[in-house]
Image 1: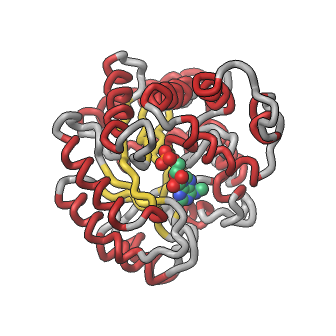
Image 2 (image 1 turned 30 degrees about the vertical axis):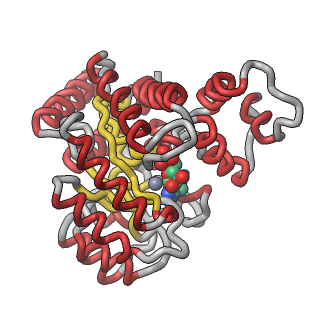
Length: 340
Ligand SMILES: CNc1ncnc2c1ncn2[C@@H]1O[C@H](COP(=O)(O)O)[C@@H](O)[C@H]1O
Ligand SMILES: [Zn+2]
């Protein structure tokens, strides 16, 4: 089996509903609508079911499908299980999964969040060799009131799920929203012990990045357009970047793998971790992302092991968990050096 698959990996930036593979979508579709693919099913889902290649626009439709198919507890639980299983199958040993709690016709936001948390708790009880944490997300497009609702809900539930919700994410379509409006909610999360892993500098807005830094960001999601003074600040404070290569190339926020900003960060020896973002939507895996990173920037296997070792330090795992994760990487590294 190949090195990237076997390498014990750390995933720090993955959205639950973007991480549903084609087979998971097919399974959830059957759960909701039955075996028959009804006539009139749009071509795109038909392509997904048949594993045909998709255009970018069709890839983005997967978010809509995913949201439709995870609108009730059983389906959401199944989706969460599948995502954890597929990361574990890819030798991911630590996963920080993020999701926006949603209120649907069939469930409340509280039910949404407890469903996901219950599955995560069970997955660690089953000892699948993967540690999973949850980062509740704030979807910017849903507005400030929902943001505060999410924070209050997470605060309320955190004592029932100790150690599982470690940080808050801010994501979603940023256009037409103002970051400062979300500061009170994020500040409240912070005061209650949540770290902040925000989508930051995903588009060009120097001022917004400054405001995020002023609030305090523990990790930067993407950071595509962080340059100049802001980059200097990130360097001074050693704020890690979560770099999602295929996501950025497919969304065209970077022109190519070669031109991805991770190149600049690697050169600066700035803390970075390579992540998938939405492996279902962008049809990738963490192994594949690491392989692309290594081959594009001529990194060795030793460099890639080191990248995973470093990612442990950027994670929001507890000290005990970090110790156990480090041991797994060391064990792999020793086996590797014996084979050489
Ligand atoms: C491509 N780059 C991105 N930039 C910003 N937000 C993104 C994103 N990819 C995903 N999301 C956010 O995650 C949601 C899906 O997962 P959940 O329903 O929360 O589990 C999307 O609806 C969007 O809000
Ligand atoms: Zn993201």
